[in-house]
Length: 222
Image (cartoon, rainbow, N blue to C red; front, side, top):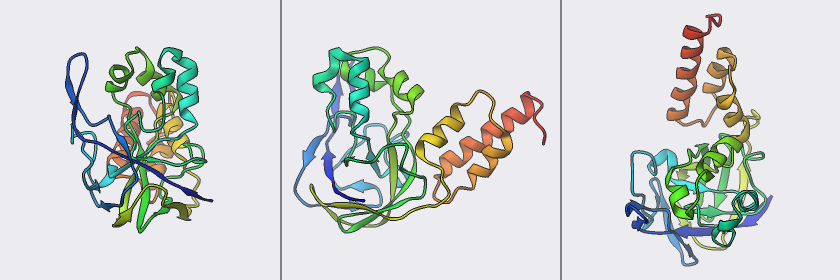
């Protein structure tokens, strides 16, 4: 399935009312820009401990998720538009249910690979002036996902976005989130999913840590 991409970029701005720095405010970018290992040249992240870097170089958010958020928070409907959750990439037809860890996509001249879900930030509530949007995104798995860059290249608004290598193992973003949210998942499944090709080291460690905790505290077989 080939589609056309919309790109978003932005700098650091204060986030009312406390004026914490954020890179969430992004504007559509039509002109060519270089997509490097760390992301789009000229795009910024305020807290590099939790955003950005090679395993979170590019953030995509599902367009369809905005309607679900608007239904839950009607007072924010006019502001819930593509780009407003701080994503870099918006493409119709893709969501957490059909994107798999390790999938490789062509974006303009670049090749990118799905690495992990996004962990929603508390700043989302501040951005839209509501309480509970961050928690809804987390609970319902409306997180979006991050790519790593396998091959750098020039991209621009309207460039082609196409999956060129399907992972084939069946672990979608939604499936991974459901596994992590499960009350008491099988530690063996957590450990097996840790070896999913393309999964970021951070999420590998999350799965191993959860499995270890379950084995220690719930009497799960070792």
